[in-house]
Image 1 (tube, helix red, strand yellow):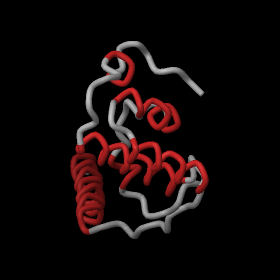
Image 2 (cartoon, rainbow, N blue to C red):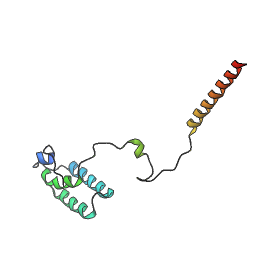
Image 3 (cartoon, helix red, strand yellow):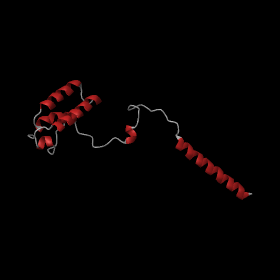
Length: 122
């Protein structure tokens, strides 16, 4: 297990009381870790017991260490909008109305240029 940096509030203020907001946040993180499969059921229940028995921030070090570091990035919107599970392909989509308008405009422009060239050469 990795050790928390000294700047972590769990190490720098270990005697501070655990606030309910902190407990709720860690509980949510544990739920997500269990749902994502990063911790198994036994570890999940053990960490919940530690979390709800803690009275000081220092008591939460095992829970925070088990969760690991929080991501320092956000998932790009294009990734979040995908409907397929990781490793699966999504169905291709038909071009929307805007794509058809743009394509029609380009084709019309090419036809117009060709007609102008033909007229100029006559």
